[in-house]
Amino acid sequence: MFNDNSISISVSDDEADELGRMRVRVRRKRKKLGQRLKHRIARKLVRYWALLIFIPALGLFLFEASRIGKKPSLVESERNTVKNPSLEKNSDANLNRLDHTTRVVGGVRQRCLDILSPEELEQLEIPVREESDSPVKKVLYRSENDTSFLGGNNSLSQGQPEATRFNSFTGTQTLDQREKSFKVNETVTMNCGFYSENGGFKISNEDKEYMNSCKVVVSTCAFGGGDDLYQPIGMSEASLRKVCYVAFWDDITLSTQEAAEHRIDGDGFVGKWRVVVVKDLPFLDQRLNGKIPKMLPHRLFPHAKYSIWVDSKSQFRRDPLGVLEALLWRSNSVLAISEHGARSSVYDESKAVVKKNKAKPEEVEVQLTQYRHDGLPEDKRFNGKKALSEASVIVREHTPLTNIFMCLWFNEVVRFTSRDQLSFPYVLWRLKVLKNINVFPVCTRKDLVNSMGHIRKAKPLRN
Image (cartoon, rainbow, N blue to C red; front, top):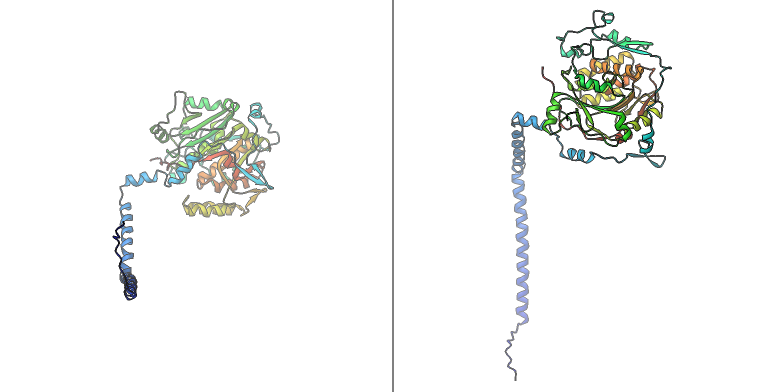
């Protein structure tokens, strides 16, 4: 029934052995070819290794040469922008953060800033404190109109070279006058900016009227278009009623911010900040111009009892009345400032300033030579507190003693370098009667502000 259509092929044992030997020979040939190829590549690498190194090096050289040959406008544009994209990204992530900074104390995690609750802040009253125990009762500020203080060497023509740093805004100060300014009496007379009507730092009458109304002020400044204006956050309704927020700009910053659609409204505000546009800045160095609102708020806000300074690179994120209570009133302090996070000695800081090109080596050496001559010790602690401070946040009561301290500090940065970390410990050491200072830890400063970093390089003033 079925047809067998299959085909059978017989293979002898000899043929099978021959087939196996052929497979072995093919594998051996493949192995030899692989070995020959490896040896050939190795010989090529040995022969041309210099060329293989030279070609990438040439490519790198041409790339760098093309960067150097960029147009100046492009190079300047790169300088005025954030160099590290990751920094810009991290800054954006920090904006508007309200989470508390904590640290471990005795095995227990605690907040770095123990601030009152919102309900307690609403009931908080600004204390009125007497200065009966202060050795200083009155501070007089020298001006060109005070003929009794001129002595033939206290006025300055506007043609004075910038290299001296003293000008018609500061008035001159001899070393002898500097030495006398550290002596504390019941009535103290000293230089403290605003020496001449023609000295610059002009503010409109409308802005002056607003500033004269402030009893508690949070202030910042951005001159030269360097930084954006970050809106304060975390404040109570009580602080919104009782606290002034004032930002100082110049015309360069005004133009920069208007270009970014951050415009001052009809009442003079950008968000919660009252913006004061200053005309005729007295220094070519924008860092020195920034020291005026930073160190002399008692001159700018004559009726204010308390002030909080915040650098323009930071966003203030706590209730100002709560900050005053936590850092001043609770500890009966008149000045609160953050300790330095990296160093403790003026002399160590001076090396870091020079290494990072923050100031000219010869300027720093002049300052340190004077401080050594005056006997400033290399101690890393004064009165049990860390000697070196980081001054991006300054909280203080406006008293005769703190006003003197800030004037002395301002005069030092004018005379020497604008790196105020170098002069703060010196003034603190010289003004021994000022003891109730709260030097708070770095983590407290981090809780007070969101650090944003400098956005762009400030533009200097032109002659």
